[in-house]
Image (cartoon, rainbow, N blue to C red; front, side, top):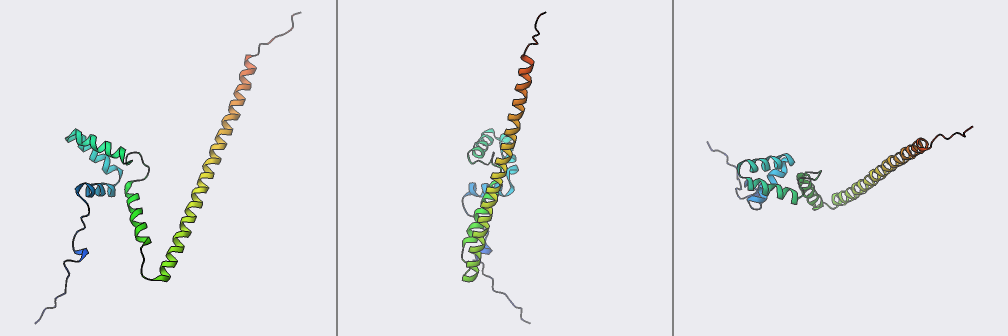
Length: 155
């Protein structure tokens, strides 16, 4: 009885783990995948065990804007990777034309939506400022009325 064997290419790219960059880049990518909480946990552990490491992590987080940014670096990393993959050619010219058209339409919709949000914020700011000015005018009228002495002619 013969056994069937499959040909496995052990040199294929999927057969080896991807290890791009040095240990620092791999550590940074690993923490980025887990979000801001992982960075903070690493910093706290650095302060607990070896305080210069915690200080260095804090400085790096501030310098790289990981500490104060609203978006996680993982979102930036994934968006860069997605854009790179989206811009590569699939080999099918009809699909590539459709993809380019769809991406340009989505970019236009995104910019329109961001403009809408800016106008909405501006309108809200203007309404709040107008309300502040009305309140201020009312207070000054009340203060002026309180400051005026009641003068009645003497008889």
